[in-house]
Image (cartoon, rainbow, N blue to C red; front, side):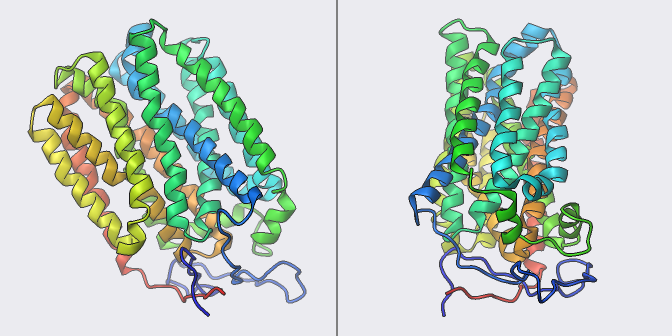
Length: 448
């Protein structure tokens, strides 16, 4: 018996108190229960094992593309929001902060939605959240309504992230497939600033016209993903991921996941990672315009270069990281990002800064998939959605909180504060990730 590539290691059940947390269940599944035992390990599915599975994987990639197209557009649109609504940096930065409310709600409800509606429910609820929000934004509502709509965007993205990171993370060759999933996020993030900047600066469109395109993309995502996952019902999900009897239903999985140290390490790390990624993408246009003295189009292309670096890194380094080891590779990538950030900060040339930030994106691109792989190997399968949903929501929350903080500080101190803040965040993230090496390894469950 050999362990298949990309397969996940499972800890024994129940977990040893203090090994990954302090929780010990009071009840175990009954011998007469038809659900598989919590410690059962199935052969990991492959992404290309059937046409249906390929269809589902492409549907998740489309969802990622829509999320990336939204998240990266902030940076290109913010200068025009500032002019259109006549608001300060601090107030405009609420468009970063408000999605955090949606992400927080998704972290609480994600496992419950899975248990109640299955993955089919995710493919309906999440795209509808996006579709409604984008449609309202496209009619350029009053600023308070705009902020509320970004809460709805965060809710939809949070559901997507929790569902698809876990589903793909349990596949064979999960790091490579996750690299493609997150790579399509990067594709959307790469082309959206280019499209938004071109439409505004070259075609004379208003900033909100970009959301006509986003509304259409959300409709396509709804139709394509819902049809692909229509057979993923709640009963099927419950059979594959049984809850612990007598523990308060679906919400108990989230509470139990939070008793594991690895959940908190990954969540806090991704909180910082998400903040770094979106802070760079969100403020790079302003920084390159006002500090490096580029014109609006050149500065928009610098943001495109950053997201292109992330995209290429996810497609390429997804094949490198498993050979280095997921834990160690993240240390290497963060260290290289710190070195490149120093160059970005200390060499005051537009071209050098644009190239440096592109390589920062390249080395940061595959970090999120790596964290998901590590988490799926250290946690019981029935806790994956709850734990990774919580961690992914915090990552997106970091992408909301830290760009807002940068905007608030930039209002008082100037946008030059971006680089030292990013360096400090990278250093702290590296220190947090180092604690993962001190966790004991779970027992390995072999697959056929």
